[in-house]
Image (cartoon, rainbow, N blue to C red; front, side, top):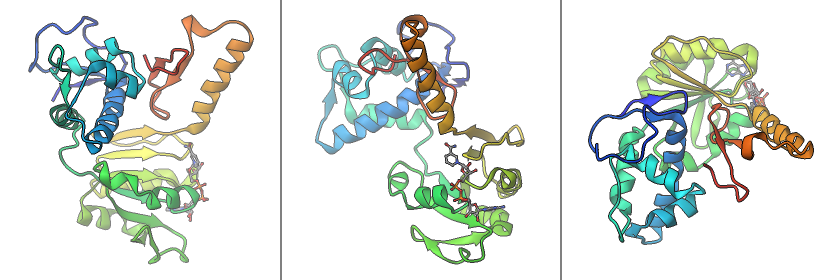
Length: 259
Ligand SMILES: NC(=O)c1ccc[n+]([C@@H]2O[C@H](COP(=O)([O-])OP(=O)(O)OC[C@H]3O[C@@H](n4cnc5c(N)ncnc54)[C@H](O)[C@@H]3O)[C@@H](O)[C@H]2O)c1
């Protein structure tokens, strides 16, 4: 699987150069767009599409077609002139590169407002992320099913996560509780943590931690409204964050196209 670079810039900025099959680093911004293409392709397949042109796919994904072709070149996928891409093949290639050929079981810790919403959201299992465990400390919640899964106690995080082979932990506790929850998730063998609590977490190097902060997204929007009102749009157009709180910046054209 190609490596992912974390700075949004790939090892080369060139057009597809015929090196299909070679391992290439994938910029993180491209990874975020691949996830968008996958969602669009899944919808197209449900509607019976067999092939898709790069123009159709780029329009549906809100990405300019040159950027789309560049992104798909990381897969070694260049399409067929006059035909485009096979929806099924492209879907499989993107799933492979995103590591979605296996399911990633998810645990949510902190079953308050946010945790309830996440646990009840029906869209995760179909995308390869079944919710397998829920945790809280509130005695009124322990044992109560939320979204079909009984809430377990914080103390049971390591045992339950290990037993259910949870690979992703989502932290939706108050900030003061988040580090303890993180430590227990790590003790339970969790490989990735998505942190909604407004606090910096410390985890071993082998554990991927991503922070989601919707307030940062709002501040980004506020910045651009302020820049526009001052008649000083940043460097040719608004900058948008392509995935919540990742810090992956990309430009949006006036029609909202992610470039
Ligand atoms: N990142 C974002 O964009 C964003 C948006 C909304 C909320 N948040 C954050 O998400 C967190 C949850 O917000 P909320 O509105 O759902 O809060 P909430 O108060 O409704 O829920 C918090 C839950 O965590 C539980 N809890 C407390 N200590 C715990 C512990 N040690 N282990 C397990 N569970 C514990 C509580 O019993 C409660 O059920 C907060 O940190 C909040 O700041 C982030």
